[in-house]
Amino acid sequence: MNKFTDIAPGPTASSGPDQRQYLALRDRFALQIERGGLPPGAKFPSERTLQFETGLARGTIREALFQLEAEGLIYRRDRSGWYVSPPPVVYDPTRWVSFLTYVAEQGRTPSTETLDVQLEPMGEAAAAVFGDAPSSLVYVLRRRRSIDGRPVLVERILVHPDVAPGLSEHDLDSSLTALLQSRYGVTMARTRVEMQPCALVREEASLLGAKSGSPGLLVLRTCFDAKGRVVEYDEEHWRHDTVRILVDTRPAPAEG
Image 1: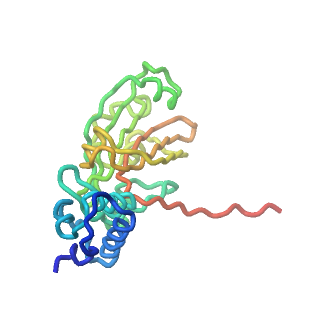
Image 2 (image 1 turned 90 degrees about the vertical axis):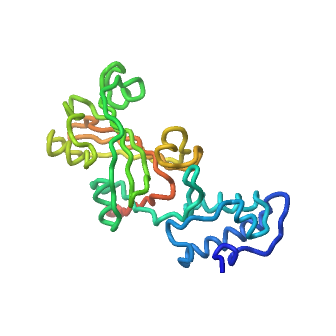
Image 3 (image 1 turned 60 degrees about the horizontal axis):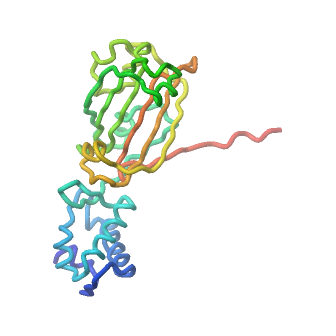
């Protein structure tokens, strides 16, 4: 039997999405995903096919799919359709390990693709981060990173040329942190991380194969050396279903 028609409610077509209908459809899809009936990477039939097989209005089906997407259970590939999301990778921003390391530690296969690197004027925003003049030059490195062959984030990294002269001459598909330490003797002493929800639009959406407007996670990271100098500033746009943030803290000892 068809695994999608098996889990759908009986034919109750209507002119618009009914909350009980789309939530019931969402629950049944989610249960199949949880039980492994719809494994990671499985492609959903088209909305038209689901409409024919379930007897539900297309608006109802879309509401169910949008709900599953918001929960990170499924995702869209632009012009390709809906797929079951792989398990998210766990990211702990308090750990001093690279993307390549923590992804591999979780039994997944990480990869990095350098899209572009060049010296550009900082502009007002970057100058405020680095404490420099807007006309000062900064290395701008753009990379796309993937897990198990699926693009999960696009990053824009700024590095001051005084910290890493000739940076563009090196292989930047590997760990930038390791390169800065081994080639330039730069050691990170402190990192400030900010995270907020965002929408993937324009170039970020295209590079990640996502529909423009898809939910995402914006991670901003500022790295300092022991002297308090900004070494690196990162802007990362993640697909929201690909990462889970985990911070393990211990309470400070009670004062006497």
